[in-house]
Every structure is written in structure tokens, then in C-alpha cells.
Amino acid sequence: MPAARIVLWVTSVAGLALLARSALLDPVPMWVALGAFVGYAALCTTGVLVPQLQMFGDVEWRGEPGAKAVALTFDDGPNPKTTRKVLEILARGGHKATFFVVGKKALAHADVVREIHAAGHEIGVHGHVHDRLYSLKPPKYVAEDIARAQRAVEQACGLCPTLFRPPVGYLSSRTAAGAKRAGVRTVAWSARGLDGIGPTDPDPVFSRIEKRLIDGAIVLMHDAAERDDFEPASVEILPRLLEELADRGLAAVTVSELLDGAKSA
Ligand SMILES: [Zn+2]
Image (cartoon, rainbow, N blue to C red; front, side, top):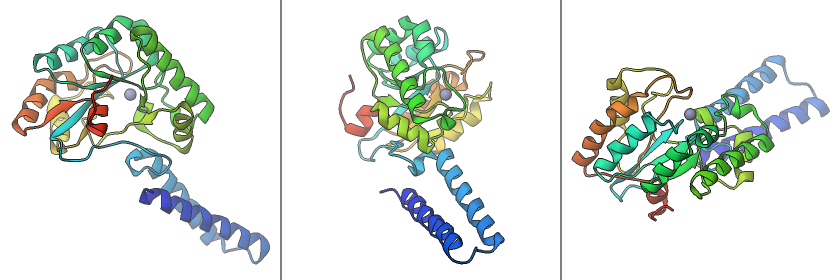
């Protein structure tokens, strides 16, 4: 069990014990109660913001080193213009990647979904509408939202994705429960360029990724902007990144290939 989940369990039990003690014996001093509450809230918030801790559920965020491979992943598409640019760059060297698509965009651009699939890349889902408050939504909402996005991809290319990346990347206990209910595997990242928020200078995006470009890395990039209102810097840095991978003797594979060593469907 991940260390963060053990810490969560231990602190939860300690908190309940403190409550029981206050109810049955003497109330604890206010500063102790307040300190415990603030500490517990900070712990849970950290767990939500850092999915790699796996505090609330199992998360894949890197592969085992040894395969000399990394998984490049692209969020927030498909977009007819920018996704096709990414596909064209990847095709030049026969590189494979994983696209976490937004269900609503997959419905609108089914032809692009088919092109991703036909090129041999893997497709995961990234929510149906890219809800920014996803981590606050109940498990039922999350499971239904994932299922809608899965249906959108299936309608487009006949494949039902089993990988899921939460919108915005946060993983609350509710999101984890919803993903479990939907039967999908949650995927985070070990490197990211932070280019999805707005137009950015490509150099810092490249150097953020390059620092963590190691054997087994899962790299989070964007093939489209959330609102399709700019071209993410990932598109511009991709040729440079692929050169860097070649220099380091690393292959670009899909997430499933990286994690399971198998060719993805
Ligand atoms: Zn996103």
C-alpha cells in the first residue's frame, strides 16, 4: 500500500479517537482540535493535488526503468488543427503516443479520433466536458462522465478506452471512487511541461520536461488547448523532444506498452 494512504488511514483513526475522547472524557483544548483539523485538511489537499502519492486510489504515473522507453501523453484534444500537427510530427519517426481525449471534442471531431487510432496510438479519456471542478463531484457523476467519454470514442473508432486521466489532474477520494466504479485505470505523469493553461514560451516547457526525461517516464503534454483558443507549446517543442529522446536512446511508446510491455489495441 502506498505510504500516503497508510498515513491517511492512521491520521483518520487518530482523528476519530480524538473525537471519541472529547465526547466521552474531557474535551481536548481548542488549539489541539484546531491544529488537528488544519493538519488533516492540509494532508487531504496534498493528496488531491499530487495524484502520484496515490493517497485515495491506485494511479499509474511512471513505468519501471529498463525498457529504455517513455510514454508521451497528450491531453485536451482532439482538435482538427493542432492534433493533426502532433500526429504528423509523430508519424515522421514512427513514434507512438497516448491521447487523453475530451469526450465532447471526440464527438465533434470523430474523424480526428479515427486518425489517432488508425496511426496506432493509444486513446484514453479525459472526462466528457473537462469539468474543472471534477475533484468535487460525487463518484456517480465521475463514473457517468467517464462512460460518456468512452462512448464518444467508441462511436468514433470502435474502441472503448480503459485509461483515464482526471481533468486538471487532481485526484480526490470521490474521483478515485468514480474511476474505480467505471473500471478504468487512472494515469498521472512523472514529467510535464505546464503548457495547457495559456500560450507559453516553448523553452521553459521543454526544459521542465527534459529534466525529468528518464527511462520509464510518463510525460504530460497537450495536443490542444482546453478551449481551443491557442496552440499549446507542446506542438512546437515536440520535434526537439523527439530528437532528445533519440539522443538518450529512449523510444516513445504508448502508456500500455510502457506499463505492461504489450502492444496496445
Ligand atoms: Zn486537461
